[in-house]
Image (cartoon, rainbow, N blue to C red; front, top):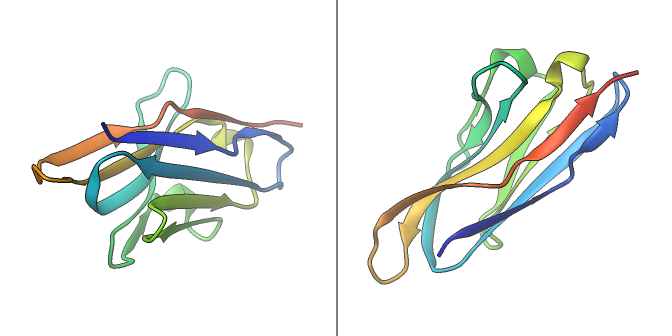
Length: 121
């Protein structure tokens, strides 16, 4: 059973920084895409940033230049460095990982439990 453990959320003032981390474990053969999504109250979940195993990244327009996604393939971890945070970045942030399971090679796509980021003065 593939599991994700997220950490790093919290409260910060506008202009501040936070770093989110997500570690995947449990019967993983390979990981393709890793990403971060967010969901603000009353809104749909949206992609914030993603990164492939080859290092190709994709960012939402609203976070370009402020957020940086990175991954450690050896440790099956993905991080999201968030700088110059704005009140509109307030949301629950979810890690998402896609890959193949050990032995069966079945595809999997799993979500983390979510971590709250609050940007407020």
